[in-house]
Image 1 (cartoon, rainbow, N blue to C red):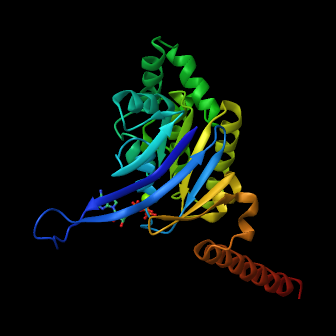
Image 2 (image 1 turned 90 degrees about the horizontal axis):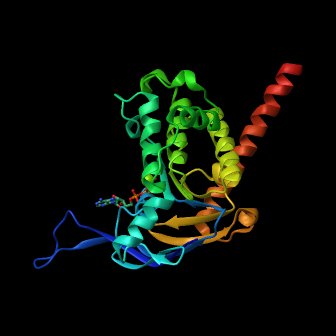
Image 3 (image 1 turned 180 degrees about the vertical axis):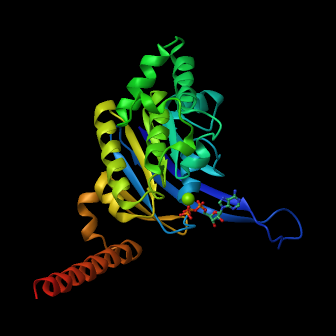
Length: 275
Ligand SMILES: Nc1ncnc2c1ncn2[C@@H]1O[C@H](COP(=O)(O)OP(=O)(O)OP(=O)(O)O)[C@@H](O)[C@H]1O
Ligand SMILES: [Mg+2]
């Protein structure tokens, strides 16, 4: 469905070292990937590795310096049609649900933003009140939320509304950029379960950007490691334990160490309790 070949991105440097022309800092180096329909690709990397920059290229917000981005065979950045095709097929959910939901909008207005996109796409009106209920039900909420404002919802509930808005425009694929990172661990699991369920029900394709390996193993089919703008590993999640990539190993080992420490702590606690 999605195919990228040799994508390079650079930004204008703040420091002007060059006397003539503008110096640029490369951020992505020859990134190539493909995402089959119905799958979920996790993009992992530390802060500043270029994950969001790649996300912006994927969702049509940033034209790469070079490289090719094909969506179902159509070149996204080569023509206006390519961009339009992308906009019809894609939805995005960002980390910061508090700013991606207008604080002056009621939940019904937030959902209406997504519904309007669908109506424009399909060229016909929908029964709004039935659609609001269907969308809220889809994300585990009910119509009592419709008249509330974002600040009257918990973080998890508001992120569910943002997910409902993303689904409202009937996309084929959704890009999540750190979409669950600001939620507490328990809510993260609940939202990931919701995403899994929606993916199955609606036949969606996901790109899931995160710095958290655990969520990748929970949700994704494949994982790609970005390190300083380069892909260092791209493997199925089922084979992640066998990775030989240095950065991926570092991340994995830190989690295993943490798990062992946690188990040790629990053992001590249990023996103290039983004594
Ligand atoms: N518009 C921009 N102009 C200049 N530099 C930028 C711009 N956007 C990003 N960068 C730089 O590109 C690099 C990659 O940034 P990016 O936001 O893609 O990282 P990230 O992997 O998403 O990090 P995080 O996990 O912190 O969100 C950083 O060094 C950043 O400073
Ligand atoms: Mg980012």
